[in-house]
Length: 331
Picture 1: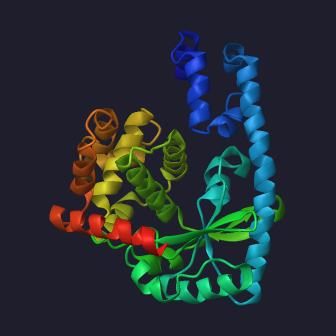
Picture 2: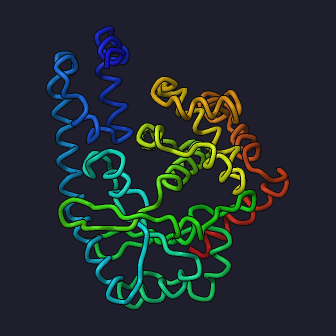
């Protein structure tokens, strides 16, 4: 708080730059509820705070509608003895922001075990006209992790994996087994969500993907920081580190976590994580370097991706060149 007040009072960042940044990265909803301190209200112009408030209300209205649709979707699954795990969206916002309306989301992400993906797709196609991959699904499942569609007014992403890549092997059975329940407000009801551990893993993998395409958003960074801040004191960090090493995710996960600690200057806010990173991980983040260098050198994106995959570079490059066009054709 003191640092924010000091910076804003000295024009760092400027109000115009702050307004542009928060609009670009869809941070209005969360800032509307976290800038109520009198010291901040004395500095931030009323029109800017009203813009953030309007963004919060807009997200609340959209979220209430989506929560109702999510509840009806869950009822349809339950009637047929089916389950899903809610990824990201309102579950992440409720669990780590404390309020679904504080985080911008526009669709619903559902996760089912890979073995149930084909029958679930067939059922969704029959009941909701959700596009079915048909005979191509076995091939599609090896090169991508989800299928997206608009059903009525609701965007749905059906996931059968968190991510698919030959350089790592996420224990998808464990993702399903460690799911937990979460109560959503209003019409949302009780839903299954991922464990804190895999919520963090998915968030960090998405940041890695976004940075490698130079499509990163501060919203993802805020997600990661709030997750880390919520779980830092209770997380079994040695166990987590051992698990990501088993799944060969450790180069990516370490790198992005270090970046988040550096971006938020959060060593004192994340003491347990920081201590474990210093003991087990690298000392600097390639992700942070890439954001500074890639704008002028697009070639470094290839180096960044390949350096953090736990596989021979040629193997990863062949997979990327093969899977990208094939995925476009099959989706």
